[in-house]
Picture (tube, rainbow, N blue to C red):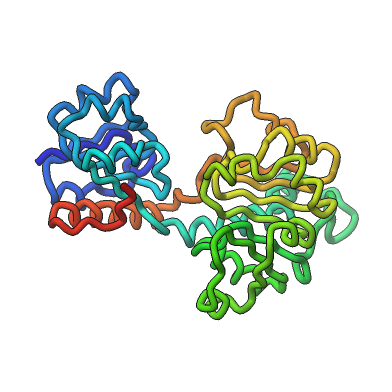
Length: 321
């Protein structure tokens, strides 16, 4: 049985092993695949793995032998799952593999905004401290998080972990969920107060987004919702780039309505040179690396291989189609 990985480089640039998949069949790994190469590489192939290689209806229609698509990610928007469901193609994803790493990145962005560690380290290396008459110096305002209110839009496993870290920092935590908040959830996270969106915008000093990208969340942060937020609010986004209306956020950063933005995702990746966030002040951008620690990618590999093994055994798991 042949297993084809269409774009394996980001998951495994060479520092981990594909052995879990090699144990399941004949494995062929391509670092990258452009659209015109898909049909040749998947000719006669029933099983493939993808990260960002897209499978819209017009591609799937030309792959009659394809029976399984394993997404090497939590998101599966690159696959037309409705078509797959209708035509018996099993699609799986990797839920929650990056919970720890993404919560860590969220807090890292927040701490960088509040403590300016990178900026001050650069100044020390440039000799500014050596020339200072005092035993210490700081360049710009520093922020203590104790007593601040953190608002979480979306409350799954990642946001729950962020809330626990924030609680240890002495923060008040609010959360807004699109779906029902159960008593079990309240009991599991007693440090969190669940509120509606209007309250979240109004009362949060820091807003962090942990929601999937849907029609309702696309452009969620726009000029209208920004106007409802506190002056000098801090925004964090480790969910999906299009959750933010980037032009509106950039304008609010320039006016000072938003004090700072920390984001690991943007609307189009890699980021375009024309993205308005690149020229906005107090903007901290990382290149979609929350999921990239080696430990995290090893977990992804193990779960993805487990998904395929379960499918081959006739009991598929983590099915999204």
